[in-house]
Amino acid sequence: MGAERSRVLCLSAYEAASHRLWRERLGRGLPDYHWQALALPARHFRWRIRGNPLSWYDAPELQQAPDLVLATSMVDLAVVRGLNRGIAAAPTVVYFHENQFAYPEQHERVASNEPKVVNLYTALAADQVLFNSEWNRRSFLEGARELLRRMPDRKPETAVATIEARSRVVPVPIPDERFTALQRDWPAVPHLLWNHRWEYDKGPERLLALLRALRGRGQPFRLSLVGEGFRQAPEAFAHIREEFAGELVNLGYMESREAYDRLLEEADMVLSTALHDFQGLAVQEAMAAGCVPIVPDRLAYPEYVPADFRYPSREAPELEGQAAAERLMAVLVEPRPGPETLMPERYRRTRVIPEYRQLFESLLGG
Image (tube, rainbow, N blue to C red):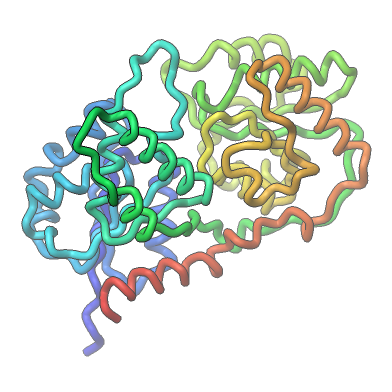
């Protein structure tokens, strides 16, 4: 008989689509582990980030002893380990898809330190702390230092340094089959793709300003505006639907992965106007399929998008939209860059999965 497979218990306290994608790709990439998962829906944020130990209090998976616990940053790992002795002794890895220190606050919400403190406790409770980008790691460490600096007294001197020593960057992998880019020329009317969640932190008002700036400069284009939507979407999307109905090719969430992959291969440019994007997987997958990126010079984008395809960040959406339009039009007058210029090779599954395996095996003692 073969050796028994190591059991990995994955805890995902706010299972957004990108979190589920990451978990599923790890499972497919590391099939020699026995995977179990506890996942909570991505809604009721305040309750999820504080209440996940209670939501899982009676879960039988937590009464057993896994070989390794892999938790997302929304998990209150310190409390989960304290309430469930079955997993208390297991080595733990926490994965930060994002961090609450760098997440932009909505104006209508009252800022709270509580989600940030949960992030801090969770990182301290883990044996290894993984981030999907250096921007994510750096903004977490800087934010944690600033939070503790503002506290009145009895502040730990070594907490952030301890987390930093345990931290490393291992991105969400992109399947090798997504790398389909071929050399091609610019068409007369470029097809622009904006493929992000329909929420305020993805900068929809900046996208609206960009599209208006392109129209004002006489630049023709076609537009696919796709991504995960929610019950309440920012007003900018309604304005885009009304003002650019003649340019729209695709609108809304695409249920078919095959249709979405075809769109990635057909589009000419992938746009980002994000205020919050810790890896930028949607942009990376579009780049792997041949889209030329036009992204802001902030967040994680400088880690993999060359400077010629980044536009300056501006505080005012209108000014940033103008800067983005100027960059986009400047790229269009040059020969279309080949796949070798923009391929995000660092993120290929065959390159990234061995990093996860090495980390897991080091914790498992193998």
